[in-house]
Length: 408
Image (tube, rainbow, N blue to C red; front, side, top):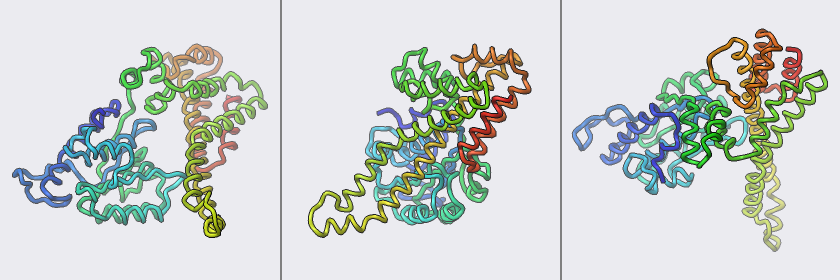
């Protein structure tokens, strides 16, 4: 296995910060101390301040926020403090089986207060392995107000061996509360450069150089999307369908048809992503409740399990809704990229197109539309994304967008 930070593409500054913090954390553990203790270490030196108990990892979509937080968590549990990738601490953290690392990845659209309270109570205990209790919150911007308050209390009164890693798109108050932000150290990630991303695809996945360059450019810095584009033909087909939308908008009817196709494609993509997990969760729960057993006791247990099965179905429905919105948002980002390419062609900007494979279509559109109409179309796509984040029904938001794109 490689160094745990090797998977972070183009994040040299963040990696340096995490390495220094992990080294100091290892020194504290070796000296039998925790955070907040300013006594001199056995080596005779004092704390450098590289390590702290609460962190916020920010960055654009696809920059690898969760991947970076997981790598840092592994380095904290590493027996050498370097994130070697070889020891049990690194391996179990990266595979999600370390007893002292809690991963909070919301199934639905928010993280509930009851879930955060239970997690905070668990994190306040001493680490079973003698190193650190680490709590990684994948989408801290999805914390409800109550969940945020529960987390804030834990951050304000931390245990000496507990570390919180919060992943958010930004430190804007819409993403994370100002109070929580003020008590955390921020590590910003940057959008991976296409050259670095293409090199990583070729080296890590054995992707041919031309395919790697195309996928890196089309993904617009989204590392996970680039990997999927390079490896999955279905993902490439869905992208092609999205980029074909502008030339299909020839009438009002065509606009509504395009909206339906976009929504249905997002639903199909989401269903494919969650279907296997849903089936596994239901099977595991039914087995735990006595499904397949015989006798009066087993039958009674199943009859009494309706509430738990209903709660599972509710969580799965919420997860499917989130997956649909995420899939739709990726499609809208691709569409916005096309109109950006049209606009840059109209102004003759010396920049690389987002979608090199549709550059000819963008140039053709640039000759037909005015720059003002292109900008209005781009604003319509961005407005649709914002409307969906504000809980406007996706179909209504997409239909309104398609009509705006048709009218220009």
